Length: 309
Image (cartoon, rainbow, N blue to C red; front, top):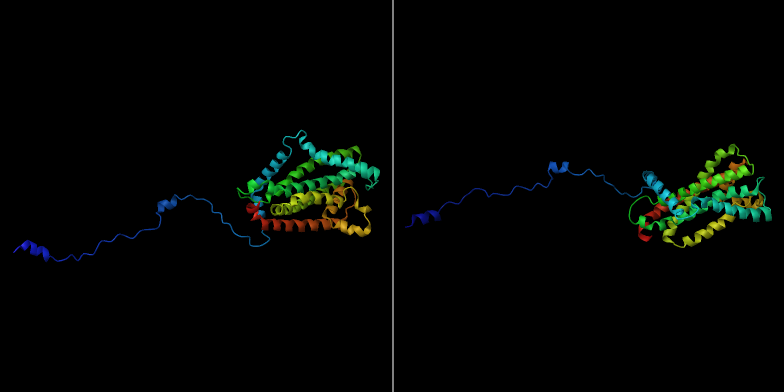
């Protein structure tokens, strides 16, 4: 008998437990956590109410507003022979035509001041308003490549167009001071109130410009209708005539135009006339309502600009 075979056949089986792999540790080591980059996390949330108009974003991007304003000024007068002189030529040439036809031929009164100064003082805020609204109304479409590539508050684009117009207004204002010296029209203490009306006309232009720019993205007819509407609005504003010659029954309708109180207040600040408080209050209230509504409508449409522009 083969004892070796028998022993190997009847050898007891091992009762030791089977070896198992240790459980996997899914947490990263502490050394890896210490080497993770400390990058800021941007959380995009929906606006919690209609009051959130993005004013905090505008303040954070204020340097971008300055850059876009300076870019608009440079592009506007790039490759022009006269440069910034065009800011003077446009209202000055219009003043000459108005003086010839409305001052000399039609004999429209000018509230005791020479008609050239009367017309030029009304043309300054009007020229700023018309140019600012036209440029800001087309600003979003003109910057479509920028809008579709990077994020920034879109409101800075029409805002830059309005700020660029303020530079032209300041240049043309120096010509008005020269005309007042030539015609010996002295300034009064009313001039201290002039910044109020400059602020009002800028806010009004910003409100209308934002609204038109948002509509122009979706409805390109705005581009063609806007110049016609602005031209029509000029004759509905006291630019070539004082509101005192308007019949009494039509003065309330004229006062509902926010430009009426602003333009007349602009003249009163320069010539020392009495301010019309009624038209001034209407202009302030109408400007604020229009500005808030335009900002709200702009923010509501802003989310689709990059898709449909």
